[in-house]
Length: 605
Image 1 (tube, rainbow, N blue to C red):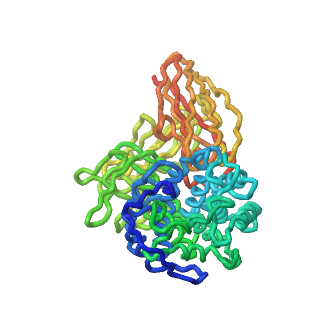
Image 2 (cartoon, rainbow, N blue to C red; image 1 turned 90 degrees about the vertical axis):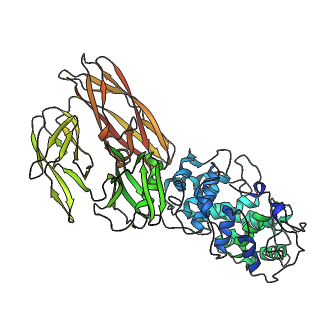
Image 3 (cartoon, helix red, strand yellow; image 1 turned 135 degrees about the vertical axis):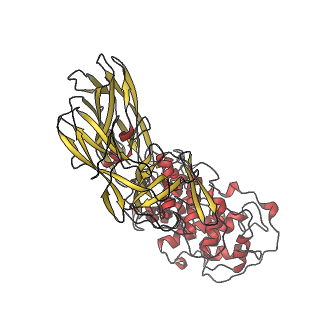
């Protein structure tokens, strides 16, 4: 985060005589301030916020596309600057900044455990990005700030402080209010009382109680008053308000001096002016907020396998690709062309010849570029590698469980002319087996072997179907482990023990503790399960997940989605399995979640 101590810009600033521009106690921003901010080179996250607050146009924010830093505060201030422009930080630049910020959270707080400032700015950033007040990370961070409120009623930047600072008390107020905490809440009232007690007779505010007033502290305090809906004229000492103090610090050159002793620009001028411009515009933090983008289901089908199958957020089809890259763990390349942005590569699979990446919103062929197609809540989005006019397939199987020896019929369909039609000649895969659909799109299946099997349909010049799970029989060759996680709060479940059901020539079991403890949205955790094959011969194992949708949609085995995962285990051997749960950044539920990871086995012979 770019704060006072991080700017050293005195060499590039002109030294002009002090001249107050306004006498009124009502906040206003002089044209000279906008001219000064526009002349800053390079622009900063704070200057972008300030220029947005005063309504300036033509802001070059291209530098915000590549994060300059790696701390939670860096993520937060970039999010605040991007949203000040009305843009979505999930897809504005090279990474999903909201997901990145969530990755900085742990144990109910954001960023460095020794700091409070990153929790304050993180809370402001989440609100700016449209994250709702009932989001588990928001709830946890609000509780963290209340718990860490100091005895004098305020906050400092450090978690170990014993005395508050005006700056972070003001920002703390704005963070809580942004998160939906009422101004009448005890925490907000206590912080407001600390601000009131700290105001000086010149109308300004010091860095800490009893000190001399300065522009940055006064600006943040004034913004906090606006966030609370306060009448600024009430906040008057010796007939002076915070607006009077800032007016007295304004320079004819359009910038604001740091304090009453400053006669010319110094290393604080840039941030002093950015903070003051926001306050004098009657604005507070976040300067602007956006509505959360729609949540859609996303499936990415590569040349040989499914790359991603998850929920993601994005306003356009291209935005969804950007925002899901972090949670799904793929890279992508987008090129700017005369026709607009073009997605050339996902997960290293680059367009070549007539084949490349195309998208199907709700299985329909889109008539506009991916950057222009606006998504709606609940849409189904498929991106696939192939020709632009490839049509999607789906496999239909009326039942999800059958008895051993049963015969059923699966149907392969193609989406064409607005409806699903039978498709002949497709390959329907069931584990290592392959079948071909007939003229009616049908495939006759006999389920002789107990276990769990995924059905996937493929065909030349068609988009691979999603995988559907069919469980066969009472599944004697089955072993399972309970899954548990707590979202957004402390606490842990029990430790599961080994599960085993040996029968009929296959004898195996699984063991491991799949309690993921406490994870916050945007975080992931990995645990290990161990398959023990007690049979003399080799076995082939597959897996399925049941229970909470958090587990069914976001669990991977050895970094592979369960429908594509299988592992061969030699006779009388053990095999480890890495089990990873990635909680989506958009996951809003809090509390305990549970599920079951089921392993299925059959003889490799």
